[in-house]
Length: 163
Ligand SMILES: [Fe+2]
Image: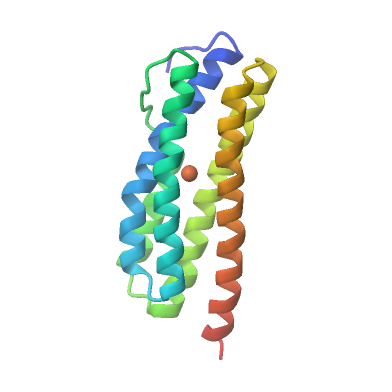
């Protein structure tokens, strides 16, 4: 990675990293839909897949506003999280336990994204790029909503699992 001189370069770098992360997520989610047992969880993952496509579009729009080419820079953090998730799916866990583990894996992904979008949004504000900041805030809001609804689903599924 070449050194970054200013906040503007850091913003572009972080958006490229997120652009790669979102692509990785869009590839992983269909496998999670398949692996989930609960219909409610399958639907939640499916809905988040559709949202993720929108997040990718918003990032493209942010690159356009910044006059930069939409480019992926390998996001190793997301790679690690997704790798752990796919290891889970290869283990022999059964329905409810696997669902609980899948939710935890998905929430780790959401929290990573929330941290990344939050800081990128702040850089954009500081650089007085309000339109970019707004795009990032919109996605951040959706990631937060997804995280909360996963918590609710986990509450219901875990209550069933211990019965
Ligand atoms: Fe996303």
